[in-house]
Length: 208
Image 1 (cartoon, rainbow, N blue to C red):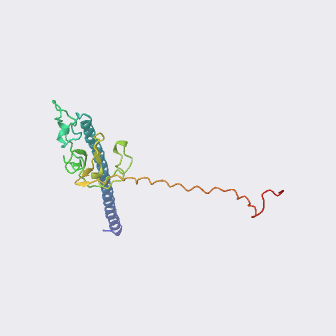
Image 2: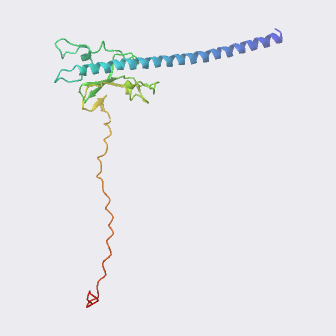
Image 3: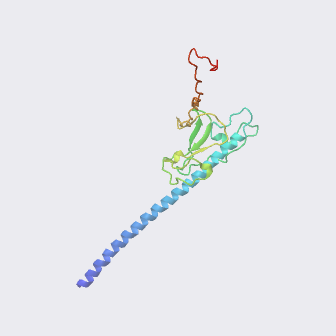
């Protein structure tokens, strides 16, 4: 084979290797972008699903008859509220966590074994979304795990300490009691100078 053809064949083979390498990089980047887009979609679905649980807990609390607890003991109570002669439905179904793919949710309870105040995902993945949440999801910013997105009831009116996964949440900071105000003492007022006294033995009337 002439040297020119051999050289041309070598360049063609090298170019093919470079082309395959570039295609591999583009393919890997495309897969990564697709995975990120899929993950962002799952997080949006988690927000929508969590809101459905929060609204159902609000509906349960708002419909509570006098003297009855305002939060359910089990999520199934949202599907069939038996506090009424004709059971009511506050949730269409027990939704699957779109991130984990399971119908298992972490529960936020009032006390160790109290009623349910909210739910959260069991995923420990770091959220892609860290800001620009809707007002309904206040407090979701800058979380380390998706499990920290807690979808809470707003209408329970429970004056109890919530517990997540057996660990109580930190109580809100209590402002220190107001300190008594100490008034500065009033500065002493200027007193008029004393009147001069007459020497002893001298009459006050100089004319006498």
